[in-house]
Image (cartoon, rainbow, N blue to C red):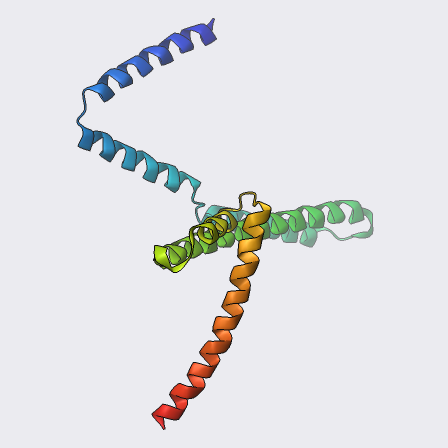
Length: 174
């Protein structure tokens, strides 16, 4: 019964939102779209690990130390000690994974921002599409792979040329 009532409420809310949306000007609609997009992006961005999570691990470690200090005969508590250590190790591994995901997310956003700095005319369209797929991690076709390999070859050649230009620059500066 609660399900049916909540569905009716949500339908009414949707109707009200649609009515309000119809009465807005085009600029207001665009502003709302921009705001919603920015909110979605903010939700996707991972936040830095909270201090509470770091303190939780340290608190667990201190609890283990206190428990261990209270024991006089450790041979009988080997099972418990093993469990404590496994749990602490698991928490430590979880923290490492969280940090790796966070750094990879930050580096991907940096790469995306750097890629946006490249002029549109610098790369042909198909290569640009293949790079976008590479950055976003979406599935690539065989032609995308071909264009990425082709770009790698071009980059290697240009880097060799850059070394020669560097030598020529040094000669001219002397």
